[in-house]
Image (cartoon, rainbow, N blue to C red):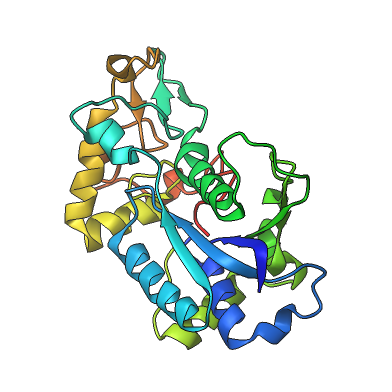
Length: 278
C-alpha cells in the first residue's frame, strides 16, 4: 500500500472486482510498475441506486478490515438537490437530449461527471496529501487507479492534473468486464450491477424497462426528474429546446411505455467519458 496512491472506486462491476483483488489476491499486482493504493475513494452523486450504495458499504467494510482507508465524498450540493430541490438551480447538467422544432434530437455537453465525481475525488486527494485548494502540487506526486477494463481501453486518458498519474490495472492485467463480474460474484455471492445515477441519459432501453419493471418507485422518480428538466431555461441554462433523459427525445413515461420496441434505442450514439458505470 502506498500513501500517495489512490483508487477512484465507482461502485460497479470493475471497481468491485479490483477492490476485492486487492484483498483476496494482491499477488496479481506484483508485476505492475506502480504501487497499490492505500486510499479508496467513492464519490456519491446523491442519485445512486440502493443496490450500488449497499455494495459500496459491503466492499468498503472488506477493504477496511484489510487495512485500507476508505472515503465517501460528495459535491457541495447533490445533483438531485440542484434539479429537484427547492432551489431548482440545475447548475451542472448531465448530457440531456434536446429536440428542436423539426423533431431533430441532439445532446447537451456533459458536465455532471466532472462536478459530482471527479472534482470531489480530486479535492479529497489534495486533503490527504496535505495541499490546500489551488496550492501547487509537484508533478507526478500521486497515482490514481481507475477501474476501466481492457475492452474499454479507448476510455483511458491522462489526468488533466499534472500531479496525478492515472493508472489502469485492469487493462494492464488484460481483464475484461465479464471476468470482473465473475470474480466479484464468486467473492460476494451476488451480482454487482452497473453504477450510475438512476436517471442517467446513457441508459439503454433495456435498462429503462428493467427499472420500470423491478423498481417502479425509482422509475417514477426518474419520470419526475425527466419532467422537471423539460425547460432548462427556468434554471437559467440558456437552453431553448425541451430536454429529455431518454435518447428518443420522448418523455420517459411514454418512451418506456407499452409498445415501444427495445431495439429502437439500444445503442448510444454517445458514451460516458469518465468514471461512471465502473
